Length: 513
Ligand code: FRU
Image (tube, rainbow, N blue to C red; front, side, top):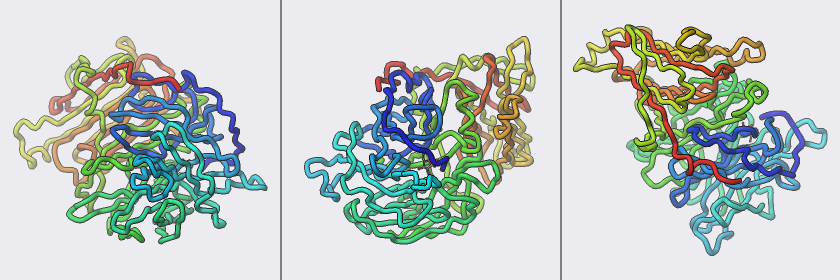
């Protein structure tokens, strides 16, 4: 969590400030945002609430912003949903459930009453920290307007320094609501019959937490062959030493406690900009869970607004999750939702191909851009392929046709012999950007099948999906240069390379706030 700060309740109008037409990564252009929060699906609409400072480009004065989508790619901004509570403080991260059977007694005439369960955070008297309590807000019109429940907080602070980010879901076997809440280095589970009275059930100790964990979420995968549960949480100081990251453990949940399986905890995204991930609540039966994350890292998120005049904050692409066999037990696979973008909104981009190199020039004009690289199979069976060297280097760099090699912002190389994908992010040279300098080595051992990489890239962000989403890495990048190109080199003869630009229909994006 960030600095302790006072908040103002006088939101300025957001006219125009949140427009972001044409981009596939959701994000206001010039207002601070962080965590996705209150993700809920209802009657064909995906709701994305998010942490927003409507008055500035820096963290503070936290409200809930609101956007809606029918396809998770094109978002329409809605009016600000929840402002700070007059006595209990800022509206921090939380979740929304639909009280379809009126368990709370608050929605006698509706089966789509929205209940937001969130942390309210008020500076302590000595200004030393934020006193965090769990509060409820209600909406009778599917998230358009909200009112505070009159008897907040519903879970008082109880002397905890860190106590936040409640994620609530319905557990049908025990016929009650469960909330997982981050409590320092533990995740606490609470239970309730009516969403209003809560009791502590159990606590789960996180393995390696140099600091506090945040934004826990417990996700159910039915019938694998029996139900499997994934506990996902964010670490502001991930043990990998690069700042913030999201981890998960696969295990079991009996309605009272979560028990992790033997594989222990894993990283969900191997890049630098994936934090505070949350899953959508109440997806249609049989749908895969879908998560989205704040595409940023608290190691430098506060510096980016100065360095980038726009794109103050954004979300990753939403991702569908499934469980697959990993080297040491079940692991998560993530696939984008961009396949929902119709064909007639994509255009293949011609590449310049010479021996050993394929180049897409002036790529900035083609954003959002999707690059697909697949190893040609040519009837080769698995054993043949394993012997065949695949080495590929993908590099996003500045430079036009006349100046071929400028600085690379992102370079990624895959070497089959080492079974490793290495991604390097090189910022411009200013020292302030130092935390952006980073190299990650992603171990691909145990990933079956031919080499396959999907890269989604647009101004300021790139997401790598490797081997059908068995490993994913997200990176923001900063560039002052207008002309960017993408070069792919290596034994490109063994690879099938295609690039396409994505053109979202304008009228469905944006909207008045
Ligand atoms: C995570 C976080 C949450 C908190 C919110 C405040 O980024 O620190 O723990 O609720 O942001 O904006």
